Length: 532
Image 1 (cartoon, rainbow, N blue to C red):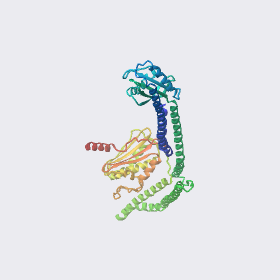
Image 2 (cartoon, rainbow, N blue to C red):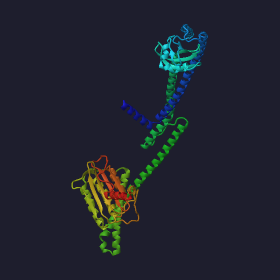
Image 3 (spheres, rainbow, N blue to C red):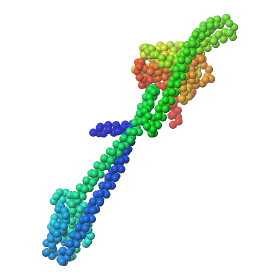
Image 4 (cartoon, one colour):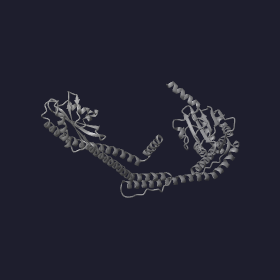
């Protein structure tokens, strides 16, 4: 049972969060139930009190009339032990009972024998006054000489337990007054009150249900267009730009639908225009890159001829031939990067994944950049496992990514060591490139992957990069389903981490290597310790 309640509670909470109609109906139901409950209680109380007070007033008149009759009939008795008093009491009770229009009512007269001691001569079921429930009214009547008292009690006077109105008064007869009690059943009044309560409760339940139904219907009129708008917006976000809402009428919801359609049309025009501009831009980049290949080849041939003959030139011409060769290399690299970026933008980049041992790939990249490290006076360290590290990757793309990362680390290493680390676990492989150079400022770890972004444009470079290397590297990592992340701190260097799934198509959940270097974590812990 508790499991069902928990499930019901969980479903209700989920509906409360997700459904506006459910919340409106729930709030309406709660408030109307509280209002109807208060109204029903007030009405039932007023009716119950009115019926009871009417019965009390009617019974009080009957008791006063009976007390007057008893006093007239018993006026001649002056002694409490008069032997004819019991018979007279019985006759008076009989006459009073005959005047009551209820067969289940009782009339009892009791004669006192002391201050608070009652002598219980059986007039008509006088032993019912021994019940503890009527001891309160008995004490009031005994302690008074006049006045009428009342009490409601549940008694059994021969017809089972029922609710009765007990009314009593003292009848002065000689030196010792006589107690007169009327025990009047309240079954008809109780049935009337119960019937009234049932009618009010049923009416309240029906009213609450009707209010909930009205709230649900009215809310549905408002929620349905909102849901339609949400579904249409989801289709628009999925690329179905021709989706529109149906406009009905001229009310606020119709104006909302019309405004939504206008917004969707404007978005469609803007997106189509941007897509066309992007297509033209990609086409322009691709065309220009391809068209420049032919003149670049011609210029390259002439430059190679001049470069090979530079020893025959004077020093100024020889230096010009060397600069021409270097700039052509950079220009050719830029064209290659632009073509690669255009393929990524057009969605034509393909992954040629195959099982590859990454240990020789990392070592080969380090060997290729060793001459650059020597020119920059940077010690290049490679940390790889002793065993093979096999992963399903595109070796050409992975080597290009590592070449960009290691080349940037050497360029920005400030003459300090650069460490390349390779590690693997059962589901992923990772390579980190750590330098101890100028580092990155807060927020630059995301900007470094933007196209043509440079942390310090005035900084001199040894290799003359194109500004597209890290952008292409990020796209290569994403093409593998992997991650390319950066960490850096001013004056503490930077670390880039490439994480790839060991099996092509698998989803990454973790990396074998930390993004934040251990030495940087130790420095932060020491700084926190000094501060505290």
